Image (tube, rainbow, N blue to C red; front, side):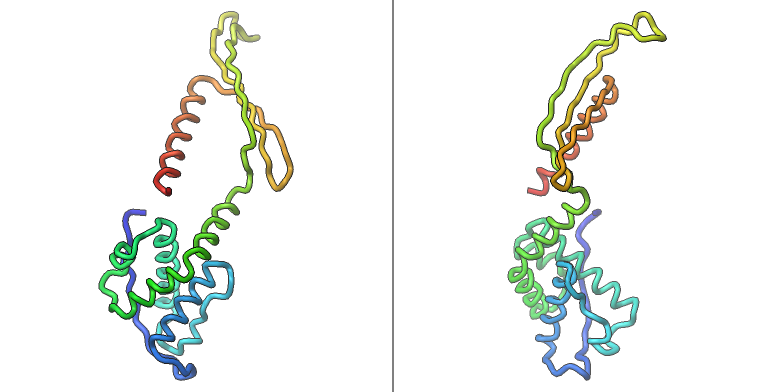
Length: 188
């Protein structure tokens, strides 16, 4: 993500809905959160011809992105208002109230989404350092090798994975793990 996107939308009240503009906005925001949490998303037809199909897709995408960023980054009220840009104060307040009311639910949906990417968990690991003195092709090799044993659980099933790495592969693994650790620390 390059930086926070500002989020602006326009609205009109659907002639089929009997609600005030404020209630319709709150209802839309909560329906977007419902969609983010795996339930029914709002439908364009529920809002009449307020937005074109392209605008509607962009609106839902922007709102979903906004809720993910606001909750995922644990934004303060001030940061949320900055993300909203020049949105009218009444609308900003409605968004802020929705974030506060549904924050834990959104956070859980983000955790579940992340968990679905990979449900494998590391239970234990063991390593051994070996020195390969020769091979069937070379009489003098003198190459250090690392044997890494991982005990994993995936969907309740335990399995062992053994990996043998040379020095370059080990350096690549360490660099990757350090980068992942930085990302995890930034998320806290």
